[in-house]
Image 1 (cartoon, rainbow, N blue to C red):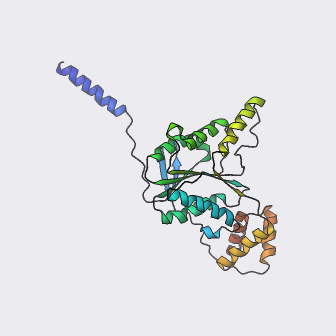
Image 2 (cartoon, rainbow, N blue to C red):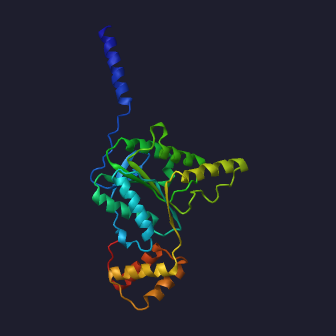
Image 3 (tube, helix red, strand yellow):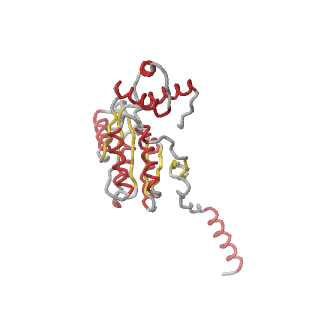
Length: 279
């Protein structure tokens, strides 16, 4: 082979190296405990610690105890279950997940939380495969999960939770919150034939069976709502006449009673009294 040919082949090799995609650096989970996953770029964006103390979630004591128990088992490597937190909006499902995580993360430094967008369920299988190889233990949170795109997303989630031939990752705990126990959109039968609709419904409902732990959040009754108001007011030193009456009027204007509505009232009251709140 003459020198001209050798130089020509060398230039081709250099060009191919420049065109080849560079290997992405392994993700780093140092310096933060909470992360947001961006599936398009595969990045894990660090987020600040969640500020809501767990004891500020009032009226959901049974749910707190059960969730923390399961999360602690996962943190120490004992058998645990993927969790579906379902129920009416504003009852503290997402707040419970992140507040409980912060409590356990303070005890177990290798515990991390990765939040994924509900529209990126199909990206879960490769995400789980990536996390499987890590030494950390991951809580993967998908807030307000439902299968608006039908069976395709349901199949992707089942694949992630079951793990294929490799089995589910031992170091990943999946937590989903939803307003619906079976995760199906209310209009899932529209624009579908009867057979296709039934098959998609079966596919979507079968996903909820992959969650070993279901924790329900029922509507908040008046007594629990007022107990939450009184607990918040005592915690922050907010003193006002007719507290219960004002809190009930607030809930009537909102058309709902929930932990979220209770805390929104407390924030409004604190602003009126010139008191700063920690969150």
